Length: 391
Image 1 (cartoon, rainbow, N blue to C red):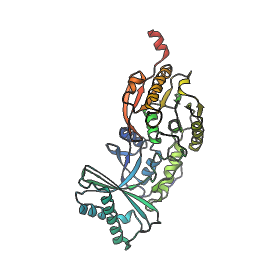
Image 2: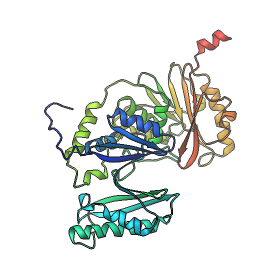
Image 3: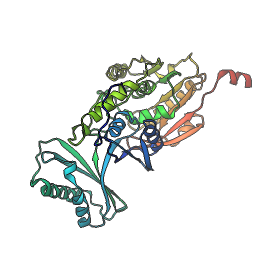
């Protein structure tokens, strides 16, 4: 932080409960990101990481979390097995602390392993309870439909209800740089996760030979330079009237000051020239300068040593026929096995990928991509000098 900035007020230092949602298998990455930001992690669950902090900490998390899907602020929790208990629990929350009489509220809901399983009924009852609570505070029975939106989430798991405000608006994967898409693109959050799991650092070359819309090379560049992935977008919480404006101003200033001006060697390639044109536009919008080339993966010849390769090849479901995808996997192995000192990281959904590819991975990690169960196959570097000595 630059010198001479105003200290936080007591209001800004109020500690709140938050949780970040994520894809299954990425909880440890989200926890590590939060801790690296100086934010206290309080619990880790399946697809969710709980943390505490001030409003500024929340803004910092929104700007910087690259592998989480959403951040929500908890405003209440209780047990409910009847609609009456749900109504009473939601109505008991002091909603006037979070909502003005001019807000437009939207209630989302989800339920799992609970007696209250009708999500639509839970949403309706929760909204009625909120409106009744605000009538008690403001004397208004109808909230306007033109006011600033606040999204409220009612989550019920094993009869335990969590009521939270959605801090994001659009999900955290919506960085703002990817305005054009190719078929079956990988999400920004999953792309960032693969980059981190690959062990990539700015000192090593990075290559995605089937880069599509450019997500993984761009996420690698943002990671290499420690650039906050959310700097180019806004968040729902910025419109919350109960948060002082400088919470986000301080977080953005901190993010700007944390950017590292370091050199990096990142390349994205694709067989489709149109995709590469889109990649260039996306990289420009993200504020990074990368190497792009039009080339099929089969023509890859790499003279650099000690790099990191990540790719999301067609699965044979949304792109290519299954037999064509399998042929591509065999060709990939021929090309990638010739790389000198490169780690290879491939995400695929095919259950027999390793057999078809022709090599067992050193590490595997179950992930989800677009609703499909996938595995990230990690192959550790092989150096030609070591192979030649063995021969």
